[in-house]
Every structure is written in structure tokens, then in C-alpha cells.
Length: 275
Image 1 (spheres, rainbow, N blue to C red):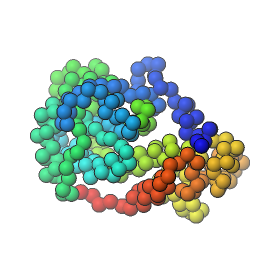
Image 2: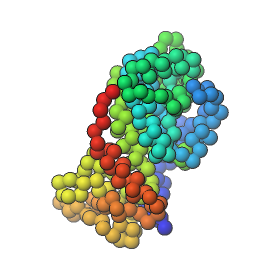
Image 3: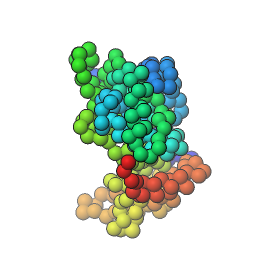
Image 4: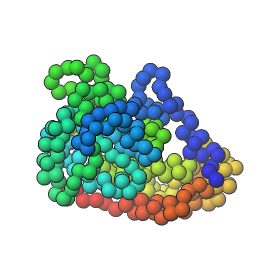
């Protein structure tokens, strides 16, 4: 049985559509059709299907930071795929340019990678505008209007769960993208929220890796579904810092989920070498 006041209730606090057309958290992401390095994609929504998905944009092909980012994303691809996450990347270049550039990406990354996810060709900049990566006034300008380095993490319900925007001059941390995706999946399954720096949190009180109950979880549901819940005492006297251990999740967590969670803890905690 699910937690009535948990993840579904919390998600309902976000609206599915914005009133001004600006894409925000909780909104259903725009659908689109496009050419990709894996062939024509008639519907982004259909491509996602019942999976989680990451749409990962980069400003331009044949640029230094983007080359390292696609290489690092390729290293993380199997881990993301094992989590049930599909990955697609995008820039405002031709698909033929993507294909030529990928040989440089593979050559520069010392980890022996292959690029197993599609790269979307958005030469018209239509997708970039729909997703707020580019101002509409820049859409038809000559030269190189740069899209931001954007990350959109999307749930099986096609709703935007997380959005990151970086400037063209700063590369993204793929470990953080994987960590955030794990946290989103865990929250959706188990009606919890991950603290700052999770799973490396609350070690000073002997509760490393513990997670918070969502604010919407009632006291009744707390007692029923989270019997090991620990409330941190604070000067305000308000009982809102409600921690629960990794082996004390909601009753609707599927078989084998806890084993995957513990593996996620280990992978998030283990430093990875730079390429």
C-alpha cells in the first residue's frame, strides 16, 4: 500500500501546465519530433515511454567543454540505463556534424567509451526555444546564439522533475546528475526527500544516509509506514526534521528496491577518477 500523504500528494503541489508558457518544475515537457544520430525521432514523449529520461543540451559541437561532457556522460550511461533512465543530448547543429564530432569525443576520452545515446539535431532551434534554452528573439539570428548547458530530468509521467542551467563556460558534474536522478527516483518511490549532500549526510548524529519524510506525510502515515522515524530536535520546537533510515521506506517499495538503494549509496559515496 502506498503512503496516502506521500509522493503523489507532494507532486500535486506542482502544476502540470504553466500559465505563461514558461517551462517550470512539475510541468509536462513539450513534445517534439527531430532527426537524431540514431535516426528520426517522431515523438520525444513516445521515445520516453514509461521510463525516466534526461535531456542534456550542449551549446555546440566541436567545442572543448562539450567534448568532455559528452565523454563523461557516456561513461555514466550504463549506470543510468540500469536505473531505467533514457538519455538524449541536443545542440543546435546538424546531425551530420554530430556524427563527425563524436569521433573527436571518443578519441579525447581515455576511458574507451562508445556513444550509445542519441544526439538530437536542433538546427532550427525550435526545441531550444520550447525548453527555454534560448530566447525566442535569438531563434533566427545569424552567427552562434549559444544555448545554455541545460539538464532536464523527466519522469515517466512526462513531467519535469529537475532542471539545471549552466553557462557555456562551466562544464557539468556527471556524478551530481546521477546522484540527483537517484534522489528523484527514491523520493517518488518512497515518499522521502534527500538532505543536502545525500548520502553523505547526518554522520555526526550516527544517521549517515538517512532521508527526510516529505513535508506532506501526516503523523498517522509516519507511524504506519515509517516506524523507525527519528525527529531532530530544534529550538523552534516544530517537528519537521523527520529522518528515516535506508531500510525503513514506504510499504509500496518494490522487492529488491532496498538492495538497489544500498548499491546507490555506495556508488554515490565512492569517488570517481577524472578522465
